[in-house]
Length: 430
Image 1 (spheres, one colour):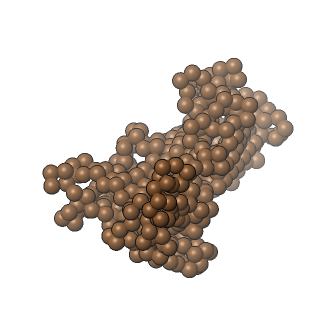
Image 2 (tube, one colour):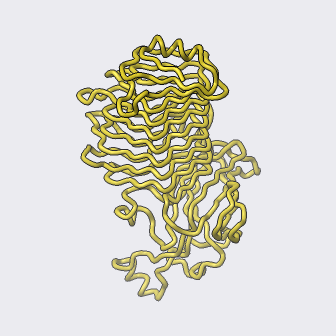
Image 3 (tube, one colour):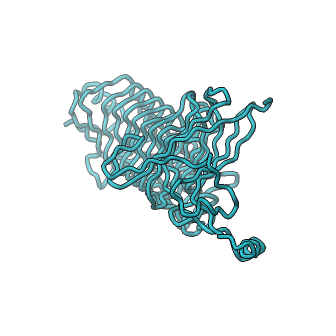
């Protein structure tokens, strides 16, 4: 164990360190520290001598670093600056930090992770900042059990990163300024070149608290479907007091679109072809359906805290495919308290619609297609109130038992359903 008291001594101790060493920082400020090209197979730990009186890092830059653990430290963020910037590094852990900016001018960024692999930020407090935690073009990131409070813009945001876990974080008391669009968690595709994949956002708590309204989880694709997210899971999150939608997602093949609504799992795979049987790449797919009790998300906005559920905007891949996980819908009645109900009663018709899934397809050079799909065993299949159920729209679902492997590779401990269907679009000139 080596004890240091200045940034210069810390830099020298790291250059002399071997894997497994611990460097202890005496209380005080460690300003303007840049570390480059140090690799440790066994991580070196950097920590405060007294957890009750944290050493303060004031601007830390890590370039091409491997095998470091920063624990029980404070990070001071100057206005408009970034407290910790990590690039081209791997196997770096930040644990139990206090990352803070200037309360009077919260414009700085806490931690930025860029083009790095295996970076974890755990059990850390972010407060009085413009943005808490940013990531760009990185992989194998773990942002868990952190707290974000008194933030102006976003808690966690970034793009181009894959194999990301954002779990069990708390976001509260955001104070947006004019022109801000604050999000607890945001992903984007701007300036990215490939689809981000294997992203799990789970167990997070977003509460407005005493602050202004902010959005919960905002996952968008500015490429309009050219770079769709693949295997995105958003589950078990709680959003209270958000503005607009608590959770909004676009273009995410393989995602769970149920929005956490309970029900029998459904795994849907679709293929979009032209009339010659060729796959249509980049077709936009708008899909939505009811829950296991026959209600759509817009009918239970208060219950779902205004978040989107059981609907998604997707895009087809190079094989014309799209896929997602959701829950099995149920039949429901059309409204019967107005002219529609009078007509139904006069015709002695049932007001029930069989369970179905809606689809709306758009692709350049092709006619739009709006359609629905049905189960063959629905009790109202032959008496659809709006005459929408047709023989050619009845699927052949496969019912699975507990213990079976789902299309996404998971083994479920409950029954689930899989549906595979091919859609055909007609060229605009045909």
